[in-house]
Image (tube, rainbow, N blue to C red; front, side):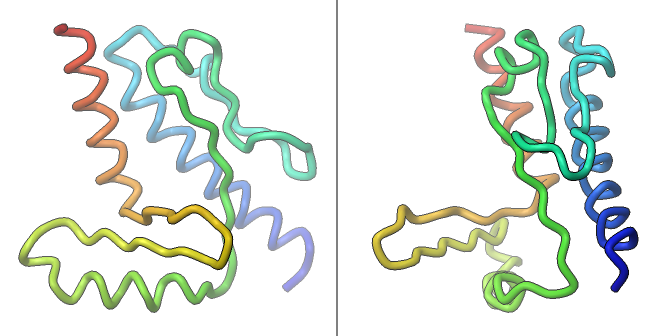
Length: 121
């Protein structure tokens, strides 16, 4: 794959995540300028949040788009039992903290519930 094609794939993923975060935070007064996709090749986080957006959603986002990742095979195994609930994959490497892998839309729905709860309390 050409470098330009790989960068375009990464850019499209970043823009998808940016758009989903904007849609989630829009009811709370976040404007598109509060959530920006970082240019390809720049250092730092891939999605830049304004201080207001970060107050609502205190996260940093790194996006990776590759042809294949072994983690998808593991996630598919978790999906085998999805009729019981939302698939959650927990992965851990030696000497590293465990990581939780969930569907992006499911994660954003959890964030939406958290923000709404914090707003009410």
